[in-house]
Image (cartoon, rainbow, N blue to C red):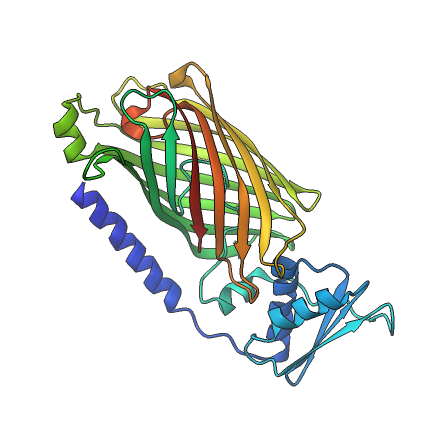
Length: 365
């Protein structure tokens, strides 16, 4: 277990070093225009606008401009390095701009934020085993062994290299790593119950317009906590396997996302695990934000089926609010209500059915 943890820490530190070594962005007019466009589209959710930059003066022309929207635009763009003044103009009240908006360039955004590339395939909101940072309280219903459980995860997806395969299509090579752990909150010392160590390399993602895809070669190994093992004297299952997975995703109506995929595991321990699995889901991210454009309602449902469990449905539901930055950046903080019904997603207990409700905090960097 210590070797696995050291392996994950080494990978994370190496990747963070690679990210931090990215060269600093130059604040020329073209760069500022591209980055400002990305902020307006991704963070402020503005439509029908154009951006012009001249010697540090950033002019945004917006159709159907409201006073509140103008203030949000100024607040979001004023902190961009190289911007000395932000002017927001109602394009309908004056001259409609002749030029199109500056192109939304993810490479510009990535360079600005000091990282090789943003994930082209967005994180799955309701997937219980998606690599990210989280902490949740779970009330396990009907369980004789556990009733109050703490679940934490530590992980992230890191871009390594990015390329283009068409004028509008991009691909990226990355690595993903995570640790998923659960704790018995009823025990005096909050005993560690189980930890799953997970890593994917290569992780290949693709995006063209609203369509995206993700392919992975991954490894998972699971380990029981020492205190729990000594307390319950249960038989240890040294669950581990390698696997391949492919997921496809499509964004529609500016708020919804549908995805589906399948997986196959091999080199399994125990060796008689059935290999196939499927996954489908639906996500919603409100096009409208509140509280100064900082809070956005979100929700998702995820269905997984595994051959090992006779294709029974594992259902995961999450809904809540997403807190967003106003000055660009990928970081998202979510406060979510959670519901799960199906076979346990925690490795050592894969053959047990569980049901829980909970509340959790989730962070994507």
